Image (cartoon, rainbow over all chains, first blue to last red; front, side, top):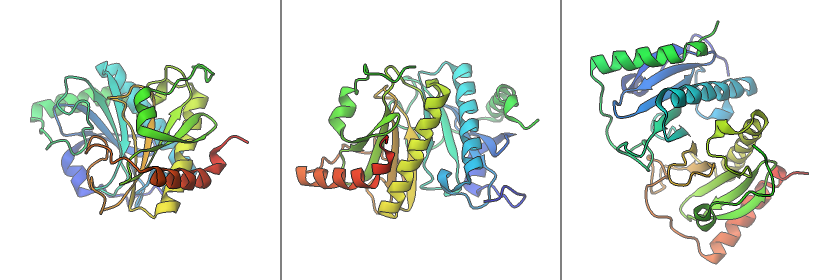
Length: 143
Length: 143
């Protein structure tokens, strides 16, 4: 599949998350839930649904991006556990979640997906979190 | 981390799933829930918790194994969607779930993890499913 200008972010992903940065393949977004440090990668590949439907190079790039996001989340949160998931049952556009989890978070030890409605961030929370993760993941951006 | 003879499967994983095959890095297991086609890969690396704590070669081998399992699940089930997840909030031993999902399954469109108690297979169901996936994934085994 081609990685080109015809990529359009799914409207539900757009409504439920905030732009952080563009990586080599994917758009990095912050999920709009103040209870978690929760990032998502959305490959800019029109029509992509399953990770393994990407071409081999794209699969690998996404894997490298997930690794970078996981490392930043762990370094920035000292979480107890990382959760990585590619589900897509509700939104088909391929996206990979990377979530920092802790025993005190409201969904623990269950998954965050489907656990409860998002607890939307205030504008100030959002700006702080976007700024924080944009800084931490500056290295993800293409040179 | 070393991939050696001191690997011991977590007792909860052992109780909740059945051995299918050993891949190059991971033990492939069938989760004991007759409502889903649900496989899990458990790298035979003592002490492994997070995917990105494996050494670089192991990370890549696990990724290749997940790809092979995803391809077999899709070919064997014609599922609507694959769900791939590495959570580990309950069982810390590193394991990656690959699940074939369909709109008629009981957890749809939510995740299978934590949705409800496992619906254990009968002996006959288990034998049939283990045989089926062992055949489909024979290529995963080391030569």
